[in-house]
Image (tube, rainbow over all chains, first blue to last red; front, side, top):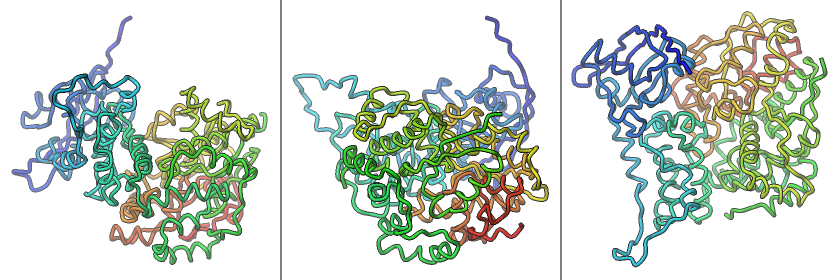
Length: 325
Length: 293
């Protein structure tokens, strides 16, 4: 089968900054003929080799394994050696902006200080915690089924694509972030690991832990290795309840409140859910609630139209529940 | 053309905090000659929170909702992005995992139901674009929205994960450069505003547990639309609508800038263009006054 190589003229706007010399970052424009065979990393190479030798970026394996070359193209986290230019042009057209994963953390051009990423990564104890007999009589066997439970969380290459795409990380610097969570899951789901609650207690902390996730799905969208961090975050939520680590707080009550409301009405009792979740904290919602009430946006508990065939729902809630709180 | 008919999964907010969502859905359906059979038996989808507590229960309940659409032999239409995600994700997981499907069906059998996987699930936005078509909408417009700059706010759960979006809808779109809502604005005669936050998160799902994070995201979204010179915003998601319309005070405080724009539901925008009255679209139920009609 013959394969035709096509070319296209592409305009690049490239972020430039040298923390040692520049007061502010600036953008350099390059226009290049790009072939359908090239990946984003080829463009970074060509900028350095053909245009400006001082242009700096991280690269190593060129095979999507080392995780060094993640950058942003038009705001989208991208592993430069894996993403084809054809795909980038297909998504964004022929005007492309090349930036580091975090412009705030830029050191030189595409190179960022990834210290915050590693700090979070280290904080969740990213290793097996196990009382290992140094002279075991038998190997520690892991069955294929047990290995399956990791659900590909072990494929993470720590490139930081999801971490710097996460909108929560931008706002809350204490938040562990999707990469750290996926890593925590990787060990929590490992049958050889004995850390269970010690790791989970950290993941349950308000402000830092899994409860601050906004469920935007961006981490799943950008991951170049299909780790799907958001699904691992959901699994960690489930583990917090299963292992009895989840204590009563606004986030846990919010999750459990859905079940209570569904068991009662089939549909949600929105006001009741907020009250159950917030308890005394409900006070801060009163001003907005009053405005909403005036506009006909609040239905009192007695005005809620329950689901038809509610008995079915109640029966299923009883028979299909797998979690306790 | 045969009359379009769908099973409508209203979700919970359309019946409570966004009554205008329900009103405008029915008004627009009537104008477009769409028949909607409301799934009054449906439960809450769990809103992506029930699954954090009990993933299996969430699957069973969503499978039950879909089973009712299947009983009617109809495609299910959702009018909330999060309902769409939870329902379509349930379908995706059950259709690709026979063992899980059997487990769920074992439970559904207790109440005489079965999930078969025969009904498609689509958001009303995509139903309008895929089944009615933008050209037809353009033809039907009686009050073109030509004097307005309108900022589309897509809402995460309609566009991400894009694999699910692409598998579910006839018109696949890219999560980073979606076009559906922009195209619909143009079809209604309006000018679509391009701004960075149009595909970003509104913060709704962390509102209670991380109010500051949620408020900053809401503020950024409205500020982005304002800086793009938008007269108003439009969204297909009632949860985004709740954040953008009712939380402007917290959002302004969080980002240190007064932000506020009228926000319309996708159905309200279409309804205005098709000549529905503002009252029938429930525009009086908004916190940020819709002062341009």
